[in-house]
Length: 81
Image (cartoon, rainbow, N blue to C red; front, side):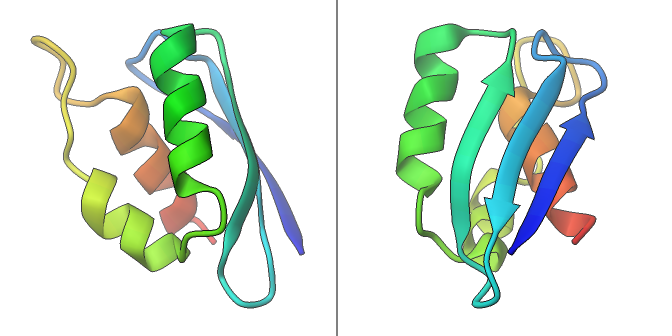
């Protein structure tokens, strides 16, 4: 299992911590700071999902006038693996 701690850029959340197992499934996702309820929901929704599916779904999502979002930053974090 690979453990990742990714520092975000351009979002209210500051860091995303998660694990990816040998089958590319996501586990134990935690966002530090940010919109607590929404980010807890994302963490629950992605639990056990394939990382490539999550990247496809979340990549490019924006927040307000920003050109990124916590979800987009999570996709970027997953791309680093």
